Length: 327
Image 1 (cartoon, rainbow, N blue to C red):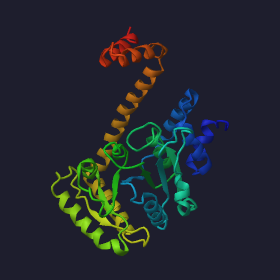
Image 2: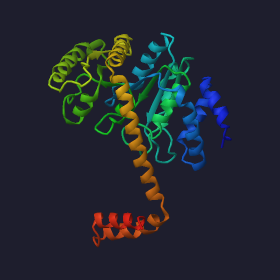
Image 3: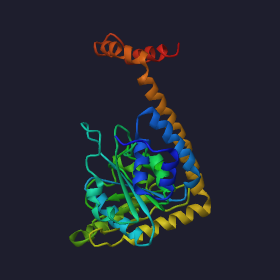
Image 4: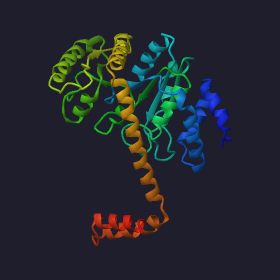
């Protein structure tokens, strides 16, 4: 196990953009050890004045859409503009090692070797929303390390994968042509949240189908209520293979940023997200303290057995457990 660094070493290393110390700082905030949590909180408090200046992007998409391939090409387009980008790739978690299964550094090998890019795979663990428990804190660390664009890649897409919307400025949804259920049920909520939709793999024989799908989405978006911030969600096509449409997506991001900063929604959104973070952290902490309580641990097995045998209602068992720590 690596020895912990001093708070000053962590701070100076992150602020200077030292990748090794940044990675160790992220590992520190992901740690479940009480002493690491205390140190991580101190570090974040000291780095707070140096955060908040990046563009935070969320990228999600249906299975097979080619998220990693898109992000590599998109990331290279950003570094070509001499901008620093950090990619926080949230991977499915191994139930055996509790680590990341897919390993985005191997799937984005070219971007991983770009001196202006930093890729951090993190296991999603048991957290919902397609993001890791400490994604918000990791964003702040990367901002303090002077990354101008922070891109969060979620595990997948679905009704629970929208938590990332609450921690980014711009939410990009990647879709495929001819998937068959583009406009149905499970994706409706996430489509409403998207700030832009990009139809990927728009090349070769798939070009016409991609253009048709783009028109379908444009028509569908007209049926949705207008966004309160005045933004009209565009639908674009792109090909990571041919490197087409990538620049248009980045220009769309910049146009969005400019419009939101001018009309005041940029700051309002960041403030709202900070309050959401407050409430989420309280809920997570209360849940951890509840299940970690020795009284709860001693009673839980008996109550679960009673519920399984039909001797007790689930709600009755829950109240009994809650009342046992309110005394």
